[in-house]
Image (cartoon, rainbow over the protein chains, first blue to last red):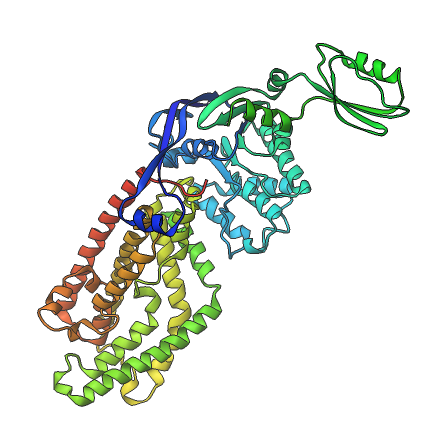
Length: 324
Length: 267
């Protein structure tokens, strides 16, 4: 179980405006500014949960992950993960967790991936038989057989990310932190990575905390979302709940032949051109079936599609709502 | 312990890959070695009486220094460690159940050993075959050679534990260039990498021989060449042990302090 209570973290950053004169002056006296990376962050995550941790750049996602990994020490607050405080008992704590930082690599650049895996085995003291079993399984699931003999520098980003995932799981961690695991991946690799993460959570009960900017990741993977902005936790709930609370509006796309139809109350036209109409609908005023009936009474409808708000729009809406 | 050996192993095989760099390095070291010996020969011919080491000792000193360059020179830093600190790659290293100090220590030792293994043999062979006054001589006794090996091991330890202080200082300064250059130049000079310590004037020499830098290449090279023998060799190794322990203690104190205040760079 992961429990954070009132975590605060500040950084001191040297700041100055651009320009040569100011740069010279900064040699003598520097202006520092205190950045509040995290303010009073609290949440609890149960074993076996899969949580999406979202927020715009600079909101404090990575800082939180680093505190939970024992890498950073917060200024104040409590954090307990499986009964330990990460930064006080770092070495004991990190034995039970796996981490993937999407923007960095944990593999040795100039040697085959295999050698990096062997190093991880020795560092975590993974039992030889267990290691072989884990490795075989990961090789099949992530399709690594061909890649393992290649030096890391020759791998494509998608191949490398699959290896990074495998590398962070060789020691059977109970908790897996994924910091932007799909960043820069193509569609096929993204799907493979998502599928794998989903399976890992469902079959082995690994607790997964995932940060991402890719809303499809969130939609495909997580039941629960934590939204952070400017260092504060703003929302904590399921994706469905959030969608409901943010907006009920539906979008309906009509393709038709005939003259432009008139709209009834509750509908607003988003896009309209010859033969195609996109309507944003407020269902409390005019229901979907009423809207369809109203339009089809006026024109010959060829095709209709109805969709709710997308996760992308919802998050953008939330960012706007909280001014972050 | 096993995990640090594993780190040693992967760094070692990683470093063994750079063959072209080793060839280039060897060429430089031959040229440098010959030049240095020629310069000393000119001084020696001018006035053999004013020469504080025997000429054959100086020649052995220089060849051994060139063969073991990667082992003893402070400026053979691990670029990877500097990068890990300044770009934030250290996040991964801290997410592992290892002590960062010993991890970097084993990594540095492995890198230096691997580079030395690649370079030293051809240099030995040539240094043994060149004619007359340029030829490297073997140590007078087995005991002397044994003392050389012990002293060389401690010397490597002192060099690495000293470089650790430079790595760790990067946590505070973020740009390592300044500290790196100053420390490398200072260490080179005071360790006898440019001219051996016996050539220093008194009382400067007496002070230099007490410093941690004297516990670097100065000691094994002078033991090998026969400039330091008997009880003085044991006293010299004692000095090396003292500085090794002192530097490790300072380094451990520094890294613990740095990690408490650590800022992982770059998001």
